[in-house]
Amino acid sequence: MINGHNKQYGRLARTLRALDRRSEQPNFLLLMSVFPLVGYLVPLLPTQLLLVALSFLHRAQWLSIALSFLVATSVGAFLTSALIQSIGGGLKDYLLSSSENARQVAEIIAIHGLWAVAILALLPWPPRSAVLICAFIGLNPVAIAVSILAGRIAPTVLLAWFAAHSPDRLRRIGWFGDAFEHIEKLRKGRTSDM
Image (cartoon, rainbow, N blue to C red; front, side, top):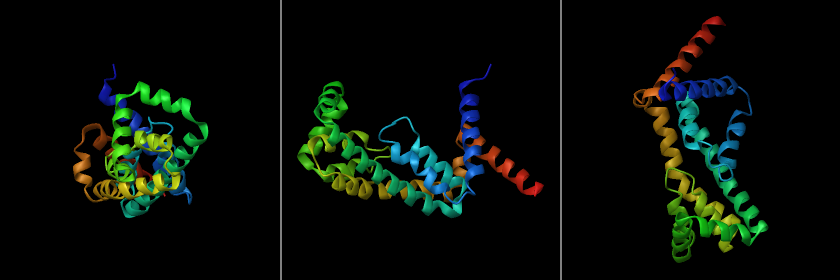
């Protein structure tokens, strides 16, 4: 029977292998930017894991990868907030009544404004609740996007830099390291066949 470790490793290795094969395409970074772009609408997408994996596999391009993720995250915040503002109040009432986290974020934003959004964006995960609440409050979508961009610069660049410059540390993370080792072996086999 396959345990959880092997399932995670297998899924991650297959995903990374598929991404690695497509990395030679000229529009690769643009395609990868779709993940953080839609990350606000589909919160299950592992954008931070993808950022780390891509930066690890393509160390020379770590800054380009980080910048494409930053722009896509900011554009995603803009599009999400503009969409929410066009949909209206029913969704706002539902969100604020169903989530204690959303209520707390709403209070922080009401007190501190866009500065709170920029600070929340420093967290290692996308500040989905903050973007939604800012949209419900009626803050300008451009201002929301700029706040997200400002707050995401440090964590995104640091994650990408770390992945590109500390590969030995990443290799020590169990199934994550196993997946990277597997990809690198496949790469060596691919180059020796040429």
